[in-house]
Image (cartoon, rainbow, N blue to C red):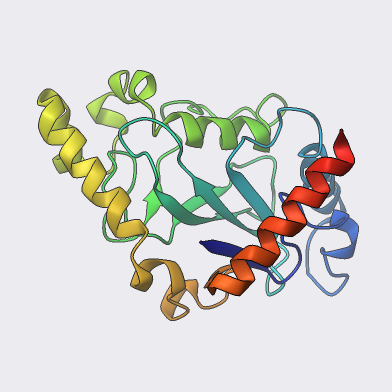
Length: 224
């Protein structure tokens, strides 16, 4: 069993965004207000997708650290870390999404981890598109309906994209990626680009698992 350890929070969202966006950052008032609003809005019902965890980075106020647990589809059981980096003039320009966990996916550059938002956000509309739209789109692209609608001009990994023509081969590739994402080297690695990611995974011992399950049971009983 895994536990998610965030330096700001261990739940879906960290505390209020104002406490995370440090005053020392060189960010325009408009961008700061937009980020605060966007982060706070994730507390609204259905704004933060199920299985996704978000927290602003403690190193950089313009970066949000995220993790996605894929529950269905080709990539079922994948555990994926990624970052969302906002430009200084956000929301005039879209953020950049980059996956830190290696995953074979048509929209993810295998060399850099950069994720293509083009299928859903071209052109980017600053007054219409919001962060929760991006998060739900990201989650949807690990499911069959959205994958089937992708066009070659939008993908960053054409080799994986071409596997779609053979569903059996694509499913096998996706399953292999999902299994690799759960490997100890992928989950617990704290080197390189994952070093400063705020959401870290730790392996729980048997007694720790019982403690966590007990706490979850108590919490559930309290909601009845």
